[in-house]
Image 1 (cartoon, rainbow, N blue to C red):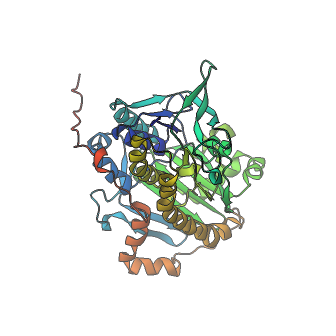
Image 2 (image 1 turned 60 degrees about the vertical axis):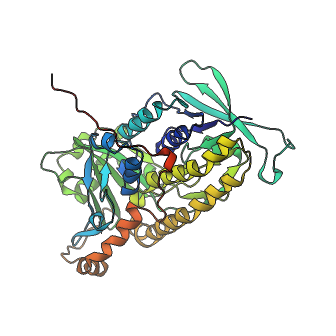
Length: 432
């Protein structure tokens, strides 16, 4: 009986899962649709939970030499001033900060570490087009959960050649527009969201603040992520409002951004066409069942997260760690039971549902109401923070709560013993 696995999607969840399964001695193939990881508008926040995992895997020194910004607190700019809403320095963690790292560097690190394992294979330009499935009524299949998935069909995006890959277990890590989820016929519950996001770059000057910033006021919101020589900007708009904004012209976006964050006023002119702006269709949903015989979905493929809190990547990585710990023994033993798959969902369902509930509250109480207002309307001048902000300022210990939720999650996952390695010292290349 086969004991191999195929992972669909080379994002953070897929690469972490591939690395961990390979360290367990499982034959694992990761199929990545693109030729490399150099794609814009990916999440760049690596939180303390994931940083601790990298240390456990012996990859901390490799990560430390990547270009990155480290922030120990989260601040929001309101009409009445600035407020610190989370302080990661209060956490009992060896890594009490968020690292802002280009995701392509993070994924390259994971791919390089996984390539050191003899049972790991990464195939790029591999677009999964369908699932291989056993016929209905096949022996040993629990028909309550559907026919057994026995692998995938995929197409080489360079040559156009069609392939099949058989596997004892297929894991879908292919994001919120998951082909695996659609092909498997798994359905879930979608939660309404009040916003979409416009993504674009603006130049960063030497004297600018380090790290990141968020600006919130009536009618619109923006977040700026420090990527060293430029800012990655997220401008929130009302759900479905992209067409209306584009109809107003690019100058409307420039004007609103400059008004919201004045330091961008002399830089928004670098946006010369709408081709410089990408719209993220924000979704929030969760599958009722994350598995079928021979198939498991994790990360955004199982539960698409809102960008609120920036926790999507770290939640997906936690899914991958839990999945590897629970599935590796079954794969090594050649078991075809759905029980380990159900256990993965059972463990990860509560932290996922809880974070999504918090995001839904933020959508309804804060974002939904504010984004319904006219962003171009005059704003009353104020120098006073809202009551809740003043309360948080007076009780700084409260900042531990959002830091704990955002930084370590509601159920932190640790590397299994068989995947841990001693830290490997990284030698900087000699000059010249």
